[in-house]
Image (cartoon, rainbow, N blue to C red; front, side, top):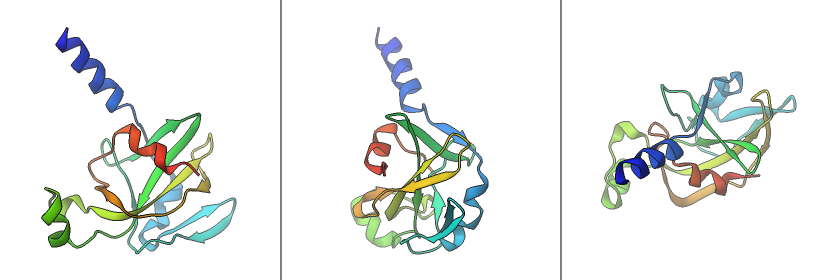
Length: 136
């Protein structure tokens, strides 16, 4: 029984949609286009999306909305390592923003910026529950 529950949880936890989208090509400058309007994100460059698996943008469907998370530059490693066991290679940060995607995978709305609301390590993927806080 425990094996069945563990397998089920593994499937549910890693249920994200991996996608490759052309909207991520200007993220080094923390810029995206929404409805053909270039928007400078209120994050410190370079920006990246939370990725999982195979270095593709992780997208979760939350209440019928496709949500991706964009992170700003990595927070000082020495500071983070005092509180969390992370590596420099994880590029963890404390600033992020959610982006809602349309059916074709293009950005249509942004959430509020999250500063100091916990750490996000964009290269390790996230559990779906984190995406609920990033709805516009």
